[in-house]
Image (cartoon, rainbow, N blue to C red):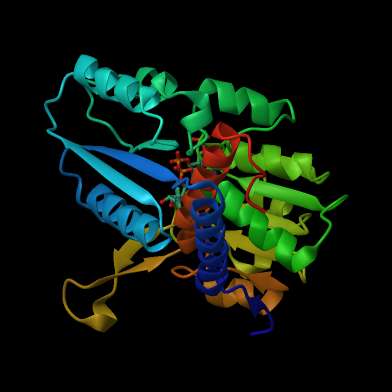
Amino acid sequence: MSAEIIDGKGFAAGVRERVAEHVARLKADHGITPGLAVVLVGEDPASQVYVRNKGKQTVEAGMNSWEHRLDTGVSEAALLDLVARLNADPAVHGILVQLPLPDHINSEAVINAIAPEKDVDGFTLSNVGLLNTGQAAMVPCTPLGALMMLRDRLGDLSGQEAVVIGRSNIVGKPMAQLLLRENCTVTLAHSRTRDLPGVVRRADIVVAAVGRPRMVTGDWLKAGATVIDVGINRIAAPEKGEGKTRLVGDCDFDSCAEVAGAITPVPGGVGPMTIACLLANTVTACCRANDLAEAE
Ligand code: NDP
């Protein structure tokens, strides 16, 4: 293996530490405590784990955390009513509605009901528009975390060839916009892209956000490329025992690490950065709400 392994876990711990220091200063100097409200509808096990971790890390950073758990059968009107109350509550600086929502609820309507300045996931039309026009926006947490790791490793990204695989609204598209804002030459690839390996081979920076286990292999990469693997895929792991599973990314780690200059592992890469960036966004929202200097 020749690639440097980018330690997302350690990097995220550093971000959380800086967030906690900023929170402590906000409390001491201004008597303000940033607060994050998370809304969870239904019993989806993965969502429950995410929400629990978000709440725990929010409290550990010294912030206020509220969890609103609603039954799967909750009406859209009741959910919109809750969002309206959180929008109006000055103690709440960030609002996150955990996706996916049940089928009978119009997710877009609920997300777009969040006040843009409290939209710490950066999913409202307003924040998407701000990001896409190069204005100060709330930036979606996963691509923001990926960008922070890229900047840490590569410094100035100007002129780099970047290929983002996957065009979802929550990862691929905002990732491409962020890289464009950094002056990369960006290609956004997807399931209809022709000769994907050939496209990826041009890239200095590869961001894989596909949801297909180990799809990107080392022979797709240019030597020395920096690879950010956003994918989280659970696969069978018979070597660990019958019925056991493990997590892998969208990149085949072993073969990619032979060719890449640096690569994020799964788990322990982009994943931990997502919540760290959520905390950072909440502090940013709090600072903007109070006309104070933003988190660094
Ligand atoms: P989506 O399913 O919304 O999007 C997947 C994208 O991959 C689509 O644009 C799709 O193309 C593209 N795609 C699918 N198959 C191929 C293929 N064979 N070749 C090229 N492109 C393909 O996924 P998300 O963006 O929500 O998530 C992607 C991955 O990232 C998942 O594994 C998810 O678990 C993980 N994730 C991780 C997070 C973290 O915190 N680390 C946070 C969010 C997601 P098309 O549009 O043409 O269908």
